[in-house]
Image (cartoon, rainbow, N blue to C red; front, side, top):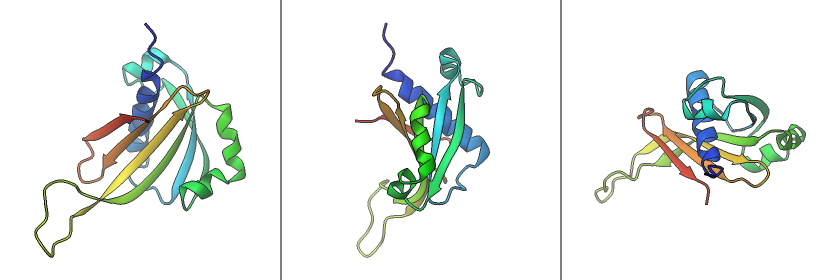
Length: 138
């Protein structure tokens, strides 16, 4: 069985869990990380040592972070993760006239496995951190 399409989902979830344990939602601007796979089976079981993450660069936005000289090192890793914490409108429920939809802080992790093996995104809202939205990149 070829489970390569699942690797980006597993790595993205693993990486988001490590962020949640360490920096939480205290991220300003946009950060770029390299991720090295150590133990594929460990990813499936949530082992914190199944991979390694290395901070590469930080900037105000997605475009600026990839223009940083340190960002070139991303190609040396098994995967690259971009992290941003931003405000998003809550889509839960409708709003009455003259009311605004509530805005929620969300941490967005966009991870791409190098060598064209796919990607995945993870969203975790600060007001409900146990609810994780995980999706393959389209």
